[in-house]
Image (spheres, rainbow over the protein chains, first blue to last red):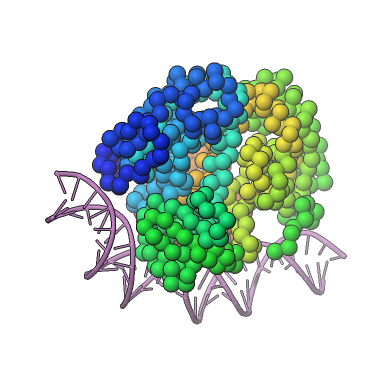
Length: 261
Length: 261
DNA sequence: CTGAAAACGTGACCTGCGTCACAGCGGCTG
DNA sequence: CAGCCGCTGTGACGCAGGTCACGTTTTCAG
């Protein structure tokens, strides 16, 4: 497999517009220019950390935007540091020698990628690629480790984050190891989607699905064709409805049946 | 599936004798009675931590021994705390509703189990069961979190451990997701075994394998019969030799071929 | 708008391995 | 020492889903 470029400049997919009125980049991102103001940080990342600590983090991080398809790092690389995602999503994949790959996790805004490698010093075990145009803060390994040494509470927070991504990884193992059929895996995948909070009382769950069939196949461990076929069969059986990029789980109980059994 | 007892008192397997001249329990363990003296701690666990910190840890941990088959915790339980394994090995499995299970990781002496759940507060995601009679120190969640708050360097160390178990989990995903055949998975499994350090210069690698075919099947994600059949075929093709519980990789290159391709 | 590439849809084929069933075989245990 | 249970070994069978091949639709850059 040829070594891929670190940053693939091609931007293929339609830009997903983000709400808010911040400055727009060529990729349609709103730019966050300061860690202290970043809503993501205060909400999820290092919540409850003192502003002084955040300011410290800000001083060592450098922000950048990347187009869709940009590769933040490749598995096997020496860990250079962590990327704190401000905006957009990043997919983390494990790749085999023949190019076959499994999407282990999709990191959303507010999450950190490259954390385990950076902490342990072992080479990155996954490849990180932007699913959409993203903005991310990079913190070098050296600076980040020093930052954690200086701020014990941040270190604890990092341990918490590691626990969360460990949890997501466990889900992945369940997909790959504990399913009897591809249908079961796809059903579980659909049920795991974040429901759109819009109308919550209504029973048919809606969710947005910005992954291709091929990417879904990577996540649940089957071939692209199987995903296509299963979607067709699910539609026929009134389990789901697909309109563009939004999925409606028409019969949630039916999907749960597929998983439970 | 019936809820299993927390501790299964039956001891079926032959006791694996441990070296050393410490006191022997009914299970054949040598007992370590103090964290400060425990060779495991100083070597791997919280290495480089100040003795005062270790003493603190000692004061909040309670030691116990468990027979083979004892279940330290079950997936889905509220996280009660962590178990620091002093002696013996613990297998961590994810189980499906129908009883099918995947061994995610085997934790050796010096490692901690129950860490992610304890840190994040989410319920244990795996089930921990003693593969052999073990001795372990239990630290309650409350005490452990306080301990980490008090000792920032320990928190960093915990983050490191989490990174390591994350790494092992990644291996598991590779087994389950990126292999073309069961033969490839078994070959990778055999190559991942810890070689016995005895005679290192000799090319045929030796390793001890204290897992049953069924357990191996759980680790690489296939059926017990397939493991048996593959072992037979590997023997026929002069790839491995099995003598009791020790495995000799006669043709390491041949095994690597199976993995690479 | 328009052409090309990516994504989706579907049929045919075939094989790897799960499943079932049962047979030897140690080795605890009473 | 007898009987039982857990582990290993092997054959037969079937099918889920991978793979290939190709057509259609959608996306998007210039």
